[in-house]
Length: 232
Image (tube, rainbow, N blue to C red; front, side, top):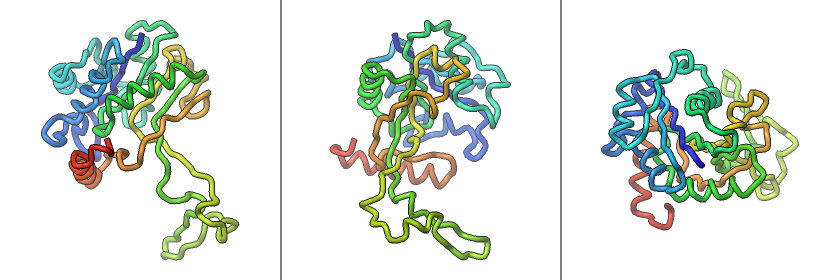
């Protein structure tokens, strides 16, 4: 059995009401809900929210909202794992149920990625699997800048190393995370430090949406992708 849990709190600050903000003509959260349904690998698609308006929008988009999240799990500093763990407990999931935490603000996620990542996760020995993408520039050649504007290499030993000789580095794509229900509720296991695997996404389908500028860029990227079928 597999369940998709989409966390969607109502108190976003930098983009108010971000989870239901219009994105190319439909609520942001609708993109995630539709991708989850289209993936065909979930028995249930759940939205975990503390907000009644978000709950109604989620239901209109085809998701289940079987509970309203407690306020203490909806603050600015609450991490993702406790929210998903709460959902696992609310749903009384067996430890071996596959749980996918899918962000409400992931309009670039595709049904194909969700399905393929589930196959990768279920056929591995992973406790968690997350969507990742590579850094566009070698992080080993990062620069530091002082308040006065002076720059210097963070790691001077890499000054003369060719970019192609540096190890490729990856970062969290901010889209989805798979984990077994038992791992989500285990306080001794963490997504980034337990037996975790990565599911690779191309950089042109990864964009954090934390500011209005991010939102404008994401919509432009999404429109561009409609003209590049091979990039989907």
